[in-house]
Amino acid sequence: MSKSKAVKFYEFTDQLAAGLGKVSVRFVRDVVVGMLRSRSVRIWDIAAALDRPVRIHATHKRLSRNLARQALADTISRNLLSMTARRVEQDMPLVTHVYPLQKKYARKMEFLVDDERSPETEYPAYQVCEVVAYDPTSGVLMPVAAHLWSRNAPDYVDDSEEIVRVLKRVQEATAGRGVFFLDADVGALIWGTKLFTNLVSRDAIRFVTAVSGRVELLYEGHLKFVNEIPPLVERPFGVTTYKWIRDGENTEVETAVVCSFGSNEVSLPETPDKPLSLIVVDWDIPSARRTEGDPLVYLSSEATLKDREQLAVIVEATFQVPDVVRAIGSQKEAFNFSQVRVLTYDRLRVLLGLLHATIYFEVAVLKRRPTVREWTRSLNELSPRVGDHPRSFMVPDEMREVDAVISVQAS
Image (cartoon, rainbow, N blue to C red):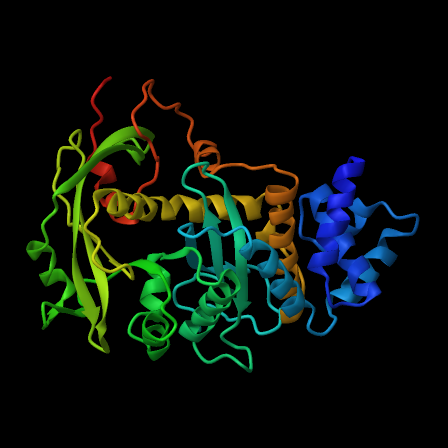
C-alpha cells in the first residue's frame, strides 16, 4: 500500500473504530488489512495474512478474543453507516434485500436456526438484511448497511421488525436522501404491518416495491385488490431496452424487451390521506414464441407520477434490483463470506460489519469500483451485440418465467 493510501487507511479505520479503545482500534485495523490481503473472512486466514513476527496461533487467539468484545458490532455498524450515508445522493436507489446466511455443516454456532424452523432454506441459517446504494449512471454500487439476526436470539420478535429497524436507521443517517427499492422478499415480509404503515405515514419514507395481486389498496375512493387495478391504468409511455435472458439452451443472450408503462394514484387503507403511485409495466419480448406476460406492478411513495422521464427512471431501477443483489453477493463471495466460521452470534455480526467496511474501503477510498454490469458480465460468456442501444442487462424475476420459450432471432 502506498504512503498516500496508508494515510487514507488510517483515517478510515480511525472513523470506523471511533468510540472504541486502543486495543479495539488495533483489532479493527488488523482485520481490515487481513481481509484485504487474504480475501477471506476466516480468522486463521486473516491472522496468517498479517505476517506478524509471532506464531500464527497467537495472532489467531488475539483476534478471536477481541472479536468477542461487547458492543463491537453495533459501534462498527453505526460508524460505517455514518460514513456511507454521506455518499448517498437525493434520488439514489437504495436496493434493500434479505437473504439467509446458510451454514450447511454447522451444528454448534450460537442461535443457529435449523432447517425445520426455517422452511425457506435447505440448511440451518441466519437472516441478513442489506441496503446497497447504486449509481445507475456509473453502475457503481456501495454497501450502506447490513444487519444479521437469528430467529432463535432472545431479543427476536419478527423479521419485519428487524427489517424496519434497518430502514429507519438508514433513513435517519441519510436525512431522507435516497429511495429504497425493496426486493420482493422484503416487501412480502413488511407489507401490511403496523411498522410499515408508520414508515409510510409518520416517517415519510421514500420507497418502491413490488406488490402482490391480493393486496388491497384504495383506488378512486374504492377498496380494490391490486390485480383489479392494472386494466384501469393507461400506459402511454414506452421504452425498448436490451437484457440478458436465457434461451431454450439455457444460455444467456442479449434480447430486446419492449416496455410500456404508466401510473395512477392510490393509497393504503390505513392512511387514505397519504397519496402513493401504482406503476404498471407491460413488457413484450418480440423474439419469443410467447409474447404476452402479466404486467409488473410496483407501488411508489412518490405521488402523482405522470412525467415520462421520472417514471422511466423508476422502472429502469426496478429492473436493475436483481442484478444489484447478485453483484453485492459476488463482492462478498470474493472474500468467501459463506465460509465464515465462528461459534458465537456476536462474533458473526462483527465479521459481517467488518466485511462491509472492507468492501466500502475498496470502493470509496481505494477507488476499485467494479460496476454492476462488470459483475454481471463476468457471469456471462457472451459479449453484447455491437450498437449504441440503451442496455441495462437486468431482468426482473417475473420475466424469467418466459426463459424456456425464448427463441432469439439471428442478428
